[in-house]
Image 1 (cartoon, rainbow, N blue to C red):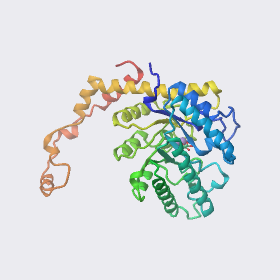
Image 2 (image 1 turned 45 degrees about the vertical axis):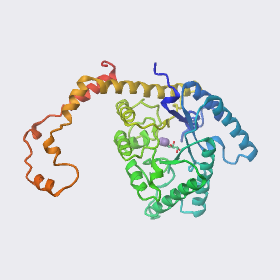
Image 3 (image 1 turned 135 degrees about the horizontal axis):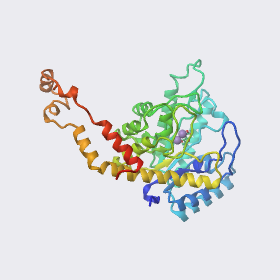
Image 4 (image 1 turned 180 degrees about the horizontal axis):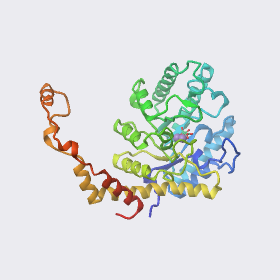
Length: 386
Ligand code: GCO
Ligand code: MN
Ligand code: MN
């Protein structure tokens, strides 16, 4: 029961299960895990794939011969296990050069270096079979607005994205670019803070069809926003290219908690939405084990993320199939043909008829039965129904 299998498309990053537990106040508490070792362990647990930053696999400054040896070992592990690398991304945040931004640094040397690093990561990903390229503008932000940088960064960021897309096209790579918003951390404020701001930016790119979103549960939650609504909007616009699942208490530092460990109800409605949507991309867990844990805790964390997802999937299916829920929803969505005939695309005739419309008094006194509906959801979650 609830055994993850590759067809569930669960993925983890090398940086997630490989997180060594460093925080701003304390040193590492766990040993670095070798990338090929992570592949074997994730495959045993039933994951579909492993994602990476360029530097998770090949640390900065690795000599070419060593680079080849790392790649050989990693590819062998992938081959032995059948694990995929669906997504890659460039680390544009660790290098001290990126302290005031990477693709939006005021220093054109730094911008050029960030772009070079991105192109090399596109090459690396193509070599590993990745088809999703994530851009997370973690350092593209500010603490100081006196620079007047805010209106300039859009053009720099847009040009860099256009450049990457055209490079990928020219190389014959088959990438979809997934942009990942976050409100803050590591910068005081990040320029592209929410799903809405990223969606708006995509419309201004040269090749918008190549770009979509990689929304993250914790990131919208940190901003006090509703993640389920954000994902629903991205889905409706055909822009959900990837998703970062984890958990987070609102108004706290970036916690990256095990999926479903805090906001169980939001996780439930997220799984309900994703599973009904036809989204067939990876379910990526961008989270890590608590700093209190040793390696056994890391694998317990990874198993827990997947297991909770599968349990919630079953609960969501039972909720949707519950006859009481179905009856409440049928009453909720009124299908009276008279007003429906007045809605939809504009026509002069409809406009004239709309002006004659008298709202039935029942629309003011009607109850929507949401208390009953929500209680049913809670009871399904608590395991006393279905
Ligand atoms: C964070 C981000 C990152 C990105 C990762 C991939 O809050 O640190 O979520 O984990 O997802 O860098 O781009
Ligand atoms: Mn995050
Ligand atoms: Mn993320």
